[in-house]
Amino acid sequence: MTEASRQSQRRWVQPALAGILFVAANVALYLALQTEQGARFVGSLGGYAYLGAFVVMLVANATVVVPVPWPGILLPIAQNTDNLALVVFASAFGSVLGESVAFFVGRSGRGVVADTRFYRWVQQQLTHPWRAFAVLFLLSAPPNPLFDVAGLTAGATGLPYWMFFSAVLLARLVRFAVLLSIGIHLL
Image (cartoon, rainbow, N blue to C red; front, side, top):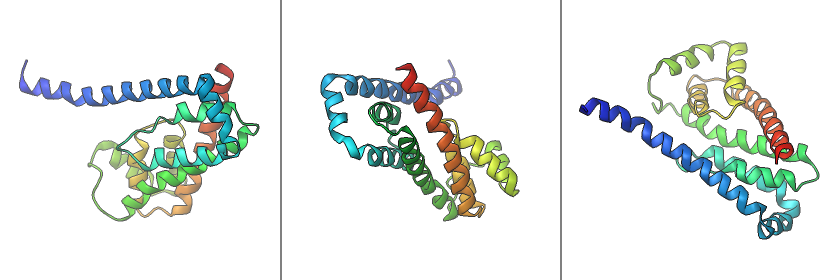
């Protein structure tokens, strides 16, 4: 095996292991919260559920280095609340504020994104207002690590913050409404 092929293998090993650990952490956290003691803990939070959903998503989206197992936390919150719409809104609002960190890092003008084909494509799309809104919406609705590049690029290209905020908020409302509804019905 050549050195180039070893390096090629190493490039995907870390993300694959991180993905496996993230899924394992979500499953473990969800199962822990489904125990009698976990259910009592979630139930004792009561009125803090909406604030918890907001804070969890704010932290989960503001940090890239430490993955936060948000599905394993949000599903029990959504299952134990009377108002799913408020959990969806609190989650979406926290999420978009967390993603704003990448936007403002991009706005600072520091070259934090590698010049890739995807970066150049996003940069080109963000120069047209309707396409910018559509691209930000479509990239931020599904769980997608490429959205970090779009958020940084949106800030770097000088896109108005209100457009970034509204596109991402609408997308995240759709994301959390679908994911939490499906999660509640399946579990």
